[in-house]
Image (cartoon, rainbow, N blue to C red):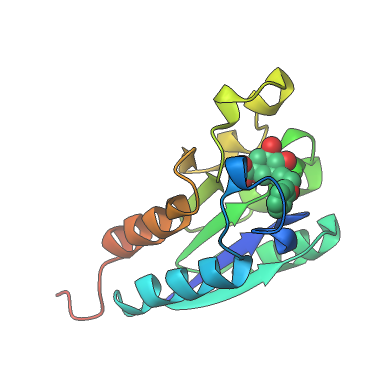
Length: 150
Ligand code: CA2
């Protein structure tokens, strides 16, 4: 069985830590990926990390991840309209956790509250800051089970 988990981040998250720290904090995407890699390793899981501002890259990585043990995805603004990403998520066999750093239900722009992708995901974590990514990895780790489990 696969021990690979994908961590995918969508548009603008390459600039994490550089803008709007009151909403998104001061950690960079490299910090997030390092923390998640460590969390995944503690469950004997290997983490594949990717970020892109292009929808087709995310679709391609989801195709790669079709038989992965799990997926953690922050689709960023693609969550509001991307049918190609929705369809690609539906092709994936493992559990999928959608993560948002901010609480999308508590934003001034009310249109940010509805992710069309959530219906294709196992769970959604929103508003826990960058900790949400680690929580998602830990959930997957427990759900998949560590290598030493019977
Ligand atoms: O809270 C989240 O994680 C979001 O997915 C972030 C997206 C936003 O469009 C969603 O509504 C919620 C991207 C925010 C803009 O990108 C930035 C990246 C780094 C720093 C500031 C903004």
